Image (cartoon, rainbow, N blue to C red; front, side, top):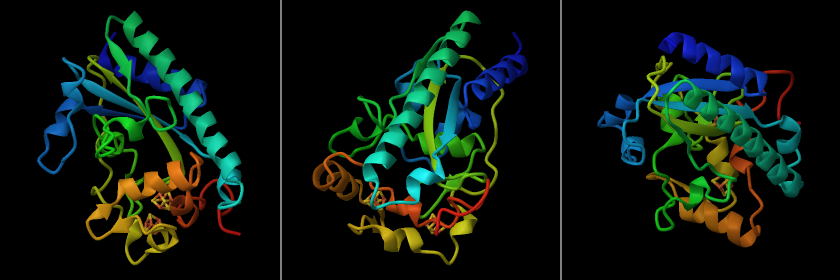
Length: 237
Ligand code: SF4
Ligand code: SF4
């Protein structure tokens, strides 16, 4: 199957499984000197493409934060489950077409994103950078992917594959222009995890996995004016 045909088939299959975002990053995009993370090709020899899929987190789970953390957390995990089922089906489709594919651990799975390296909390590669390469959004000051349709209110998963799929391209710079003049996410963080150097992942993780007992925080999403401006209404009351 030609790369455009196979890509179109994957897009259609993903949509039919409730996936809201689909993009492809070419493997060579991780060679750019501005990319500082680990390279996905190091954990998947012969890598040609990174498929990124995403679901929008329902606004109703974010609006009640910081109360309702249990419901928010469970909603995130349901998003992760949806992504994992879809990613598995896509991996099988790729295999049926003669290619290899593996699903990257994501936050909310038992081999989650946060746990890739216990010291630095860095994953095997940046899924959000792959999403940027694929044209799904850019980085916000909250260090989350800012998408056009859902702002930072998204959950992501990725597959590594040797299939030469049709790649997307970034829709703008690495940092979101929509963050200009805004610091709401920074001010909303209960532990001051955002610094001039970036995000202090240990602070964020210690808060959620220590003080909150594993429940997720979400205040840097709750505060973002881009999280709810599409698809009917705002996250803010
Ligand atoms: S999830 Fe909460 S603790 Fe972590 S960076 Fe966002 S606001 Fe701060
Ligand atoms: S709250 Fe403001 S600064 Fe933070 S990600 Fe959203 S738009 Fe950007």
